[in-house]
Image (cartoon, rainbow, N blue to C red; front, top):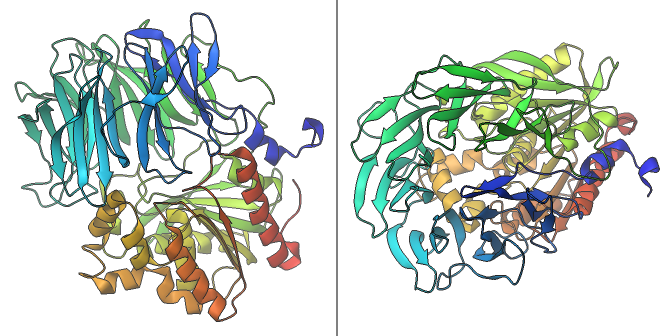
Length: 601
């Protein structure tokens, strides 16, 4: 199909796009980014001094997990099998050449963090397996890896100090996978400092590693904390124990990273589905806005010259990598990505407080419209005013799209995010029901043409919602979902087992009634509407066996359903495959909604 005859919804998937380039600390002209330029998302090296770009990886199912060594000499990338997320780290020279095992001696695993030292020959590698739990290792070129940490609960390599002597890790040894504690260790595993906000208070609070100061001999570690009910940054000197609290007059969640000289912080502020940037001077305490258009910044970095580069988009405008110098940093050649329509904000009174929803509808359209309720994954994530080709495709075809930041979503305070415990899935769907009622009563949504859909956690909520709210929806489209929570628990990767134990208060054997109440399989016989399910056969997050269990129950009673299985993991990095999946979803809706759904596109 030629570009001139290709529909806009398909162009949005095919148009080349790039990630925010990651640059080498000691060689800032060397950068690494991800692009779909070949039709599959792969890693690319970019020499900014010469302008030369080179494709680094080339695998049938794509590659997005990579890192550039601080000296710019090596590109590390994670090699798994067909999206199963279980594999080994490989590396190749920045200039190109043969791939080699990056950490010989370490068996395949799920990744649990990576930090590369400035000496070019030392790395800290995190591993996770069902049998061993988490193990962390120091890998030096030409030597056998040395294990310095092991625990059956989840842990993660946070960062390595500028001189390579200190390792900051996040761990959940206390058993709460939603709230990490921090520990700083030397390379031989001896402890230096510990910070744990999960102890001593009425509520457990989380901490996260944001990065060591990029200065030799500097023992300051930038961390995130939740002590005032939201994420905020704090500077912790791990040698002296001194904590420098940064009280910023910003209403939402706040994160930060260092400027390259360690004198200031690049602050990212997220509030009500949008984000903005600031520069915070550590010497004066001055907070200076960095101009960004209204929308969402999905990544930002401060360069050695003091400029800031950021990846920005809005629901209406496709992503671009911009700079405070006024230039577009990295503009992929080829087909241009069509825009879409802006979002409208709606606040709906729900059982747990006001629920924020983002609404898109065809330009000039008036309701009632066939409406897609597109539920985000996570659950600890959120929808934002950022560009998304999937919702835009539905809008092109005449649908309204409603996205809901239900309880469990990030960006609305710790209490909102932590509200899920024990009544998992059911709480989120109470918020979805409140927004559905608003959408119908306001005249936006046609009650006879309501599609419930989502991917990952959103796919799980879709199947759960079809069973617990059987009269509310016209059809359901579940992408890489959980359908049988107990089987999913036993088959999924260990880090997700830990999250489920936290959310539900134990294993399926310890709290069977909670898993039963939260499992879509419990309610499958109550589903009244057509169901479409797509699943990756190598998915370690929402494994295929539990999907088959749910589908088997639908089939046993002759329920209308269709299943699409594809040879990848938790989603696909291949553009043709993604277009195929979206086309199948829209075709299913048009065949099963009254009056053929909608038109357009």
